[in-house]
Length: 491
Image (cartoon, rainbow, N blue to C red; front, side, top):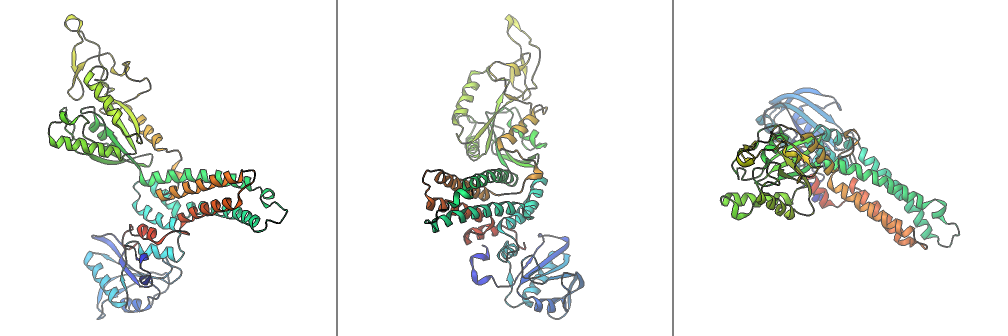
């Protein structure tokens, strides 16, 4: 739990190992507090010049060296947290770092171990970072793609916050005009018309639309797209997962029901994280081979319901040729959740061959890529029952995979180039959406023949408050505790 929830602990000096667990060339012990002079004297044996690395021995209580390394002192307020900060860079052995941590806690009365995210939390509380920038610190550490890392860096530099603050300032100016009209109703001067309040509000709404679009792109970069591959047994779901991932992650055999449980892999498409899950083949419970497969089918439907997008995979070699298969396709399609985006994909486009007739003109049987038997045709992709604009691919050869990747990006709503995107979170998007709703209601009030100025002023106030939640101007402590509690210790 974040220390923000306990006001009495905010003044405590805090200490933590700031580097990842395990062995490394260098390990860092970090301390932050209002006055670290006693800690510096006891551990370093001397005072330190501000913001200069000093090579020295780190001493135990008897003056014996624990290790030899670099010490850096950042006096308040010119530090990451806004307090005195001491960083001790030692050799990265776990035992050495634990000894150094214990020595620092002993040397500084009242010091305690830092909670997760508490260093960044103090930077926020001491106005070194706003909340959006503080979140960008964690997003930069957790970034899974280069595009996400660069976007988090832009948010940390303040690009997102500057756009939010600029929009908030424009709303404040409009609020001032509206409230001035409310305060002086006897004045003949119409403040709102002279200042073009309607034009100002339209401009704010237009800027908010652009900001919301950028935030959606940033949220997609951070959180990615959850994609589930679904379909009947042996349509090539596992082969498609392997093709997208570029690795043999799932077992592929011609035996129906080979995939019993979900298999997931995270990939990236143009820098956008895509979390792909292969599922057990969908069919009725009575058709399942055993209880294990029935459980796997149930988990498949659970994954489908929680997905952002479902790749409904069809088999070109069976479509229109097998009545039972076609009936099952319709049943599955009717059962897909209405709120989930669905991309229909037709697999096995590589299966081709001249039509060969057997006795009595019957088409000869041939074997498909997964050992399935079907009637050979000149081109299975040209069947009348498959839509002309259908997305056809071959999971075996890779044909059509790039078109599928682009279809996934379109479904996700990816539009902006990574260079112009800053990282954002779902809560940021939701706050901007609330702001847009309040501005829409404000516009409705302003458009009335006799505007209800008190209601207009209130909607503008609520819009301003929604923006303030992004940067932390109007944010509850319990939300802050939840945000910082998800950081790593020492950051």
